[in-house]
Length: 273
Image 1 (cartoon, helix red, strand yellow):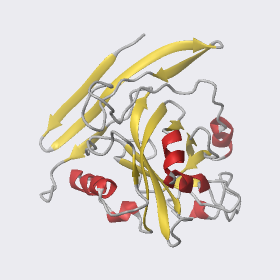
Image 2 (cartoon, helix red, strand yellow):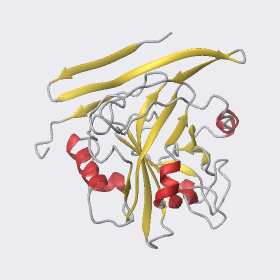
Image 3 (cartoon, helix red, strand yellow):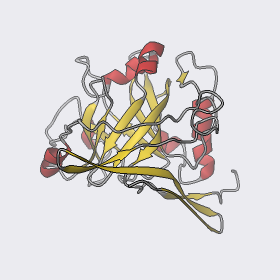
Image 4 (tube, one colour):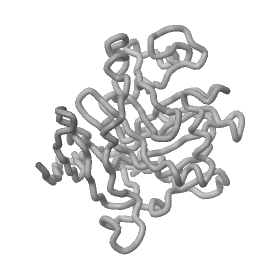
């Protein structure tokens, strides 16, 4: 089964956007799996690979990847997703404190046990359905290379070029993100610095991604332009080992939404936009 669809509705100054979605339903080992098989509009605004490089490439979810999401979810209801980046150590559940305590998982692991390395988590200000413009996912960089330590390796151009995709597995969906940028930035809270509830705040963060002057910034070829508030991003963040006192961020853009559930309203009503 294959289908393509786009839904766009307009009400006053708010627009509801759903990206083009292609879904294949196949049977693997007797289990029905949803796989993404997308040909998408690139960062440069071109379709597919016509006319040269584009940022968004065709992507297929890895069918043989086993995550521990179900077992963690049974032990901790705060777990809502599993993050996996192939050929790295980043292979962890993603949590959000039900109590709204953004500091809890800085000092506790995914089983709520005290742990100096913490867990991989989002703040209360983000939605755990992954439908925000920018889902900011935090993790520590311990000396043993676990948690988000591998994010600092993305500042190496060769490593960056070899690692293109991040996958987020949920109870009812599988998401694919194309990794488009990696850089160091001031150690400020993104969700406090930018108001992503408005298109203007989304655009300000896009300007940060495309901004020049950071020697540690790497942008994926074909993704030097083209991001808009209509896209869906994840920003993975950790303490920088390259520039102490700063944070390393790795930014991915949604290119695969197996269940077709990633959707939101975009508010263009801010006069400053």
